[in-house]
Image (cartoon, rainbow, N blue to C red):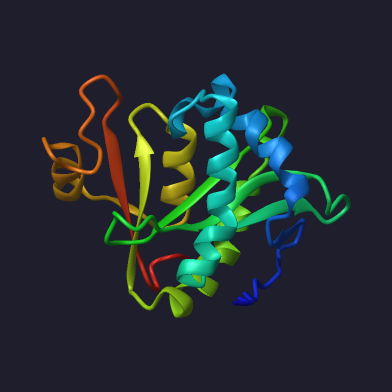
Length: 187
């Protein structure tokens, strides 16, 4: 059986948002195994990081959308982060997510710039008018990005998600706050 998936390439003023490549795995895995990944479940072991990277193209195959790898236009082969739609099979609603792999890229507006291009593309593809961003308590940088993208804090969904039996029921971990995106809310 042969399966072909077409993943578009999007561009912003400074970035190219392209399909994941095997050569991106090293940067992603280094990020996920580091303390920088504390807000996305890390640091994790190498095997888990490798399997997690495989979910990038897997999402595209199963859903028709997923994460893009963002790179500077001046250096399109070097990944600076992942940006896009994450939608595991156990979560009902898609999530808009972003991660910068290296602290050197923080504070430059790359995540907001990338997602301002991804989100309008995504609405037609995901077939819904709302999406979530799951942001750990204390991740102020991601909250700032969510707000810049027009998202609002969803207190009720946050309560449900963190309640016993919820998707983020983890008494040892931080609360996961749900930020709600609505089609047309981004300015």
